[in-house]
Length: 157
Length: 157
Image (cartoon, rainbow over the protein chains, first blue to last red):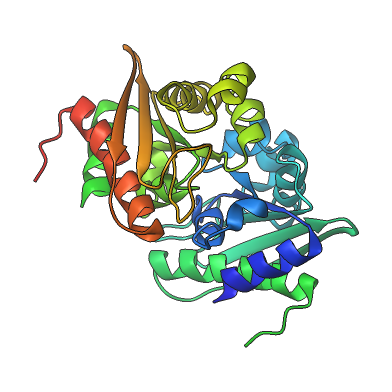
């Protein structure tokens, strides 16, 4: 299972993880902490469902949110950096996107941006996911864990 | 479904909800936001898995945490109040407990405290839940939604 691999490798490396989540609203931290013993590596997270909380809780630039809306690669980048910094973790994940069924800020369902911030910097992966609301949220969670797996060089089974 | 009822009634009342979660680590906000249109009532949340984040993110008294550990009714109360205040919601839920398999801070698996803070004050419900790690986390999530249902006077089906 993807989360168990991530927890095991982080534990071996003595590293920790946190997440700032919009569309997944806690699914990433819930999935990571489904693994027994995950308290050694999971710091916590910020669920920033309302747009203003992306600024107040995670430190995303308010002008960026006002000008481009919440669903933007740069928002994912700043969410990842905010999660890492405010939760004091080695790695920070940031997720923003549209789960549907309705569009948000002029962006259609299935558009998702995932940021990963670590010791060497921050990168963003943008995806267009199919399926309904539940599927988009689950696929986004898996994609976030896969982004971290890639950076930790964990082979995909 | 429990979450759908809560979202519907909060929408009717023009009220909002947020959560500060330890053992459930995002399951409560994830469950609430599984409902389409929940963005009208779910503000967000704080996932405070590490003990120090209960203080820094949610404002739980550091002396309380040092003296009594993280699994205590008063911690649940302060988590609920922290969620309500820091996320700017009408209702704040706070969850702390031991999912297991190992005890934490000298408390056995299945011990869970859930706080609910609202316009008229804060109350705490303490539970002893059976089952393994997954079951304790799921039952805690359901219990938190039921606590809110009770205060919103939604009949249990």
